Length: 452
Image 1 (cartoon, rainbow, N blue to C red):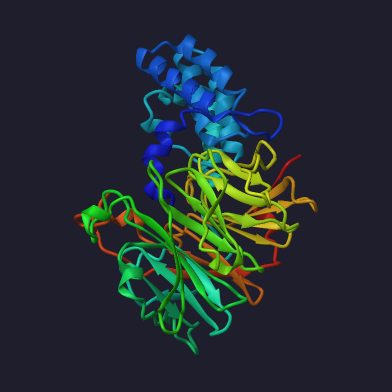
Image 2 (image 1 turned 90 degrees about the vertical axis):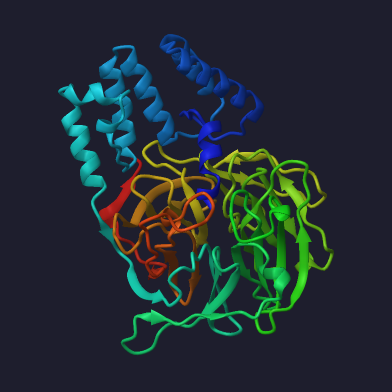
């Protein structure tokens, strides 16, 4: 659900940097430095801004593409084009592309002798990569399916719908059919009041968990509801609500992405308020427990293989790692270590598959479906593999689910077709969402980026 939060996040995350270890960060100090940085940028005080960048570099736990671009811009303004090219080279090494010609700050680099090599690398690394199979196109064109889960008891997939405020189920097509026919779950009206974001099945009870939010600025619900959000468990057959947990807060909140562990614990993120929550005992206690806060834009929480830690993509920063306490204390947050030529920013959907994290990276250019290989202790990323990028069928992907030895990804969701109110933009039309898949244990070594 990153698109809903992108504007606010970009305003807050002015820079990011490259410390030598992945540690916790002082969020308040970081935001204050960012504020000073924005003021200096408006004043065009490039020397002062460069000094602030050094201070910001002491706060951020991992490299981000945004930082590399901003530092290159400052160096270019100072006339240090050779240094600016070095920063752009580091950006290109991440496998990313950037239109320098459209950026007035960086445009002077186009005339530098060293630029052509970097530009060629960016162009080459942004070429289409197609390692998935297209399974089917979903039958409801304007669905905007934000999330997907697999319901083992019924053998069906279930997707959430932003525009339809509901859940839909389907089975894989048979024969030569390339269409997945959707059937809406008979949810109670209370469960369809607001857009539905995340969906995840509890394998123990067959219940289906979902998040819903009256997203600020969106149409389609009473304006008095705006800003409200809830986590619900529903019966996938009757549609009856089994549990409903409202998240109350004095500040902005939006329960978005989530996952359900094998023991039935629900982990859910608040993309606007910056918190991560836990619901134990299958929701019987009726308590939604805050286990960590201070994130900028947390996305899909995923339980690590040791069942002691939780990976949380913090959209503009990297993948956070936290160890929830059994006694209610807030968890300490660190960030997953990774090589400098790999970026863990821009991750929306996240899925643990063995010793790999499958990441839906829709906040990078190009957008990508990724496999990040971890060490055995799952404390560090060793390498990154592009599964799919720059293909028309992929469009903007969001989330993934594993079943039967395959990873299934919901793609071509359609966020680029709607405005800030969730309405179709003038001159646009929805294309059918796409279900892609790839083998869970297969490698595509030609597109593997290793840390040397």
